[in-house]
Image (cartoon, rainbow, N blue to C red; front, side):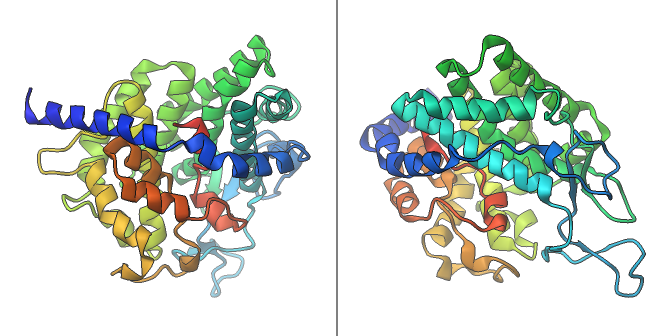
Length: 383
């Protein structure tokens, strides 16, 4: 057995040992049931419930506008100008808000069903899934052609594909709702077909390819989404493609040998972006590793790995006061949340310190910016 195989065996053993010592379902049960009970009273709202006159799409098309783009003081009626890190509160965000609500509601309801087997949770989650992905009157078209538009510049761009990061945990919830019987087999097939169509659009469209080939968290989130949707729909070819690109593109291009993330550190919100990208990378590693291709133990020849990325950020999660870089220009006081990268990494590497820190951090927020950038919230569905 070579050194890499030995390390992989040790990591798998450590993961099993850690899981026997930490019952995630028991730990998170009170929170899951408290939240799911509240969501039982909330009706589905899809993209058809609100429109913007600035959208070039139709009633079933998702529309959003670039967060950091503002009217030009010198030319108020001209093309918008960028102010990186500064969110324009007047931009259209209703569709994104609806999508974020879906991403909060459905996974929580699915987790509650998994814990209790009470059909009411699955039934309500199924109503949301049908509204978004099945029913002709309310469903969303499976593309993001009109996302992250910029007034006076573009009707949509590849950058917008990141808006559907909130569908990752929704996709994770689908098999649980299907298992409950709250979705009929044809409805389950229709939901899966929607995700298959969307993954195909991501992989073949101009905007999707543009997003795939960026160099920072947008790339990571593209592959996370495609991997999650491919796993739901059984697309082994796409899963293998995602794994290969993590090894050959994401880790070499985004993670330094010391574990730092230079693409995120240069932003005006370096702390938040490092957490966000790490969350996406760890979740992607978790999904791919479930297929038998263990990304937790993979390391490039010059030492870049998911393990190193976690080790670099962990001290700053455990004690943010040690952060050596400039603070984020907005929302710095709202981070960290209960970063699931610590949970996944803690289990994969047998790191009790990761798990202990994870347990102490806040799991829920009512701040839109936090909800938008903290997208894995139901560990019961994952471990």
